[in-house]
Length: 527
Image (cartoon, rainbow, N blue to C red; front, side):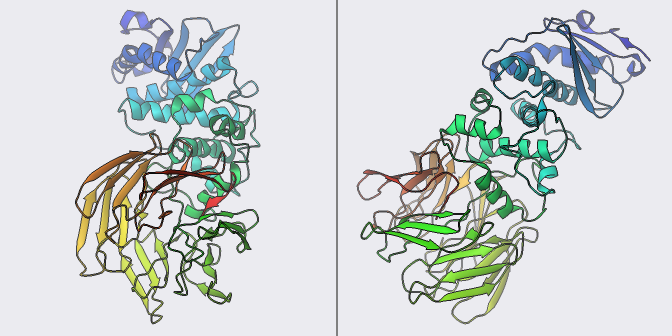
């Protein structure tokens, strides 16, 4: 077995590459497969150069590219300015070869760029994460499918103790392992949860991923605690991603019910600080500031009106034991309720229409909702949704009761069961990468279908009263949508919270006036 150029276009030569393949493949996969790669090679090179802002490689051209009969991935070697890339695609098609080639070549762009992505003599854990991310995006952008089976890596970190490899990278580790898995998952967090584009992420290179986050957002806070918090919320313990893109579970819906802690029918500015378990609230009625210690790291804030006095109560749900902890605002008494298990999504709401929030969870693996009705203590189970859906409970039929509802990112479909008559409604609205933000934006007493698109900062809404569609630009990449009725006119207002500054930005629906409030800091969870 030897390398050959027999049958290759132009003898395997392009502007930047010299291709060869293993002659044992002749008459089967080759030379047709490598010729397909050759035909696309220079366009792929231009695409990579664009990601890195026109960075020029400091290697000798042509770069040797050797396509072998082996499997297992790819590698590169560099000496005296001569770069050799070895592709081991086994029986994979031309898309697999191009995927592996991009993964190796972007590491050279990182090294030449010199902004911190590349490690010590190798790409390191930070660069390996970016390499895998960019190769996957290359496939998606060029409609070439998904990464080959066996090349996932994010689950290696989710299945581990989940240590901080965002701030503690390993410059000599090129994985795959928990360290590089953390890098890959965090880059997807920047891309799909916070909405930063490929070029912005690449251009924000730093010596740690925490530094990349700070370059992107201007936020001086440590990004790891909140990143881990929402990963733990969606995949507690050592639970891993089992469906969809197994490297990218984002965006993960941050559970939030607009808080009316003072009972004046206006949403208050409020955050929960996971590291301390502290709640910080500004009462909209008086401007008074409240602080309340309630909860511990790892809890999920689930504020709601559990005692029916018209005020939001401080409440958390603890995934580790499935227990709810609530302080009633009416009398200050503390209440606990075991309901749910690790891996559930807490979905509190008024499912029986008695004016009190009910304890409720949605179990992704089953698609089952489990509710304790506060009016009589009855336990209810409803199957609605499938793995990969996002629960979006709300009062879509306007009968005063919370309806079971899910949004399916893969299709952009909403599926609702009306509590008033059991009818099922389906609505296509939104696309993969959007964040669902249901609310009553037209003030008719019914929840409207709505999504926020992080990459554009656009809100897309269908008014339930008229079917009218509305688009509103409000927010930017890195923001968190926090819709609520901040002006008390019974309509949901467009609002975002910017962790980098701890700033809330609101458009009051009553007047169109824009409101800004500094409250909270990076790492907090808006509540």
